[in-house]
Image (cartoon, rainbow, N blue to C red; front, side):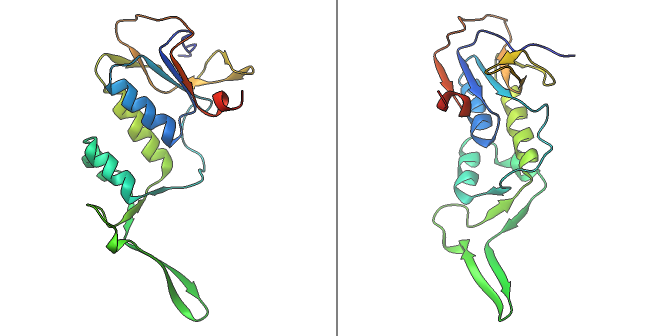
Amino acid sequence: MTQTPPTVTTVCIAGCGPAGAMLGLLLARAGIDVVVLEKHADFLRDFRGDTVHASTLQVLAELDLLDGFEELPQQPTSTITLMTDSGMVPLGDFTRLPGRFQRLSMVPQWEFLDFLTAEAERAPLVRPLPAGGGGGVGRGERHSGRSPLPADGRRRHAGGDRATGPAHRRR
């Protein structure tokens, strides 16, 4: 089923990368009417990075998301080394980082984004806007919604209160 993204919301986020997905999750948890637009129907493609740093692990713990995150396929590491002709050269040692987490995790970013958007869909008083299509948003591009809308169907004026994301910064 293809659904046109709503034309009215309090917050519209352009782009469902890690920052857009996390912002959508936080706003949805706060009960704010939010839509996250993403031009792709899914996250199954190559990304710039699959590294979740210690500071991000701390944020996930503070948001009570760590248990769910730990279920994702990942490779935790506390050191990074480089193999050279002379042998292994240490590049990073995370065991001395302050705080609870002295590691980082290599996690496929599509898994991380699916996790964040699924968590956003669990927020109170929201329902997901199915991905897979969308009306012309921006310069005639087609986008698909990835994040929640109010369950009661109430809509506010399309002007919204805030705009964020790459499309907003280009203006």
